[in-house]
Length: 264
Figure 1 (cartoon, rainbow, N blue to C red):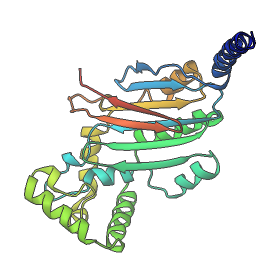
Figure 2: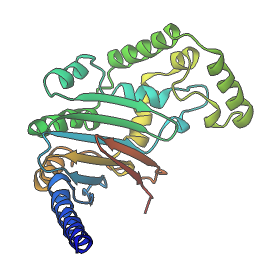
Figure 3: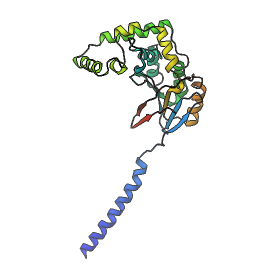
Figure 4: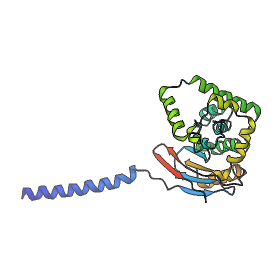
């Protein structure tokens, strides 16, 4: 009799424990909607991922042309184009101190990545600063000289390790004169040959809305996102030629998203 009561109690205890666990899981877990895809009239692809309740927003723009498009002897052209998008160093301080986020620009063989983040309440201001870089790029002689000198100085101050030298030698051996055999950031010699006209040509060829994808992740409603993008990024020019596109990964605290953009 005692054995039957004990088994009966264990059975009810197990059922109660299962019910409690099922009830607690939805309360503790936080799920987000799947990313939505849109496209502006100028051809810019937009991937939107809303995170309700998030006080921040992150934007990652990929220009689908990178150092692989540098002219021979002028390695680092696309890297300089990325640098001149935000030529004023105080812009990064503004993102950190006033917008509570960050600004990063990086260039690899396949593209230029621009990452900006900040408070969701400052979304319009963030897009406005991005618009200035894309629509009214400040390719003045002074800005070009400043970013070129800064990158040359950075290269000269960075000691070259044996591993770096070995990597360059292997790349040159494998790829020869092919773009992947050259450094995406260029060298002091190649950067000194790049002129303002080279950056203007690169901007005209590659810095176009239909050669880019923008990812928006954060606590901003979709209607607000699209309205702001149409108003501020809509005037960004569209290219009249097809440029190969690539894939990239956009990460966010607790989430990751990999996109592959295929030309239509």
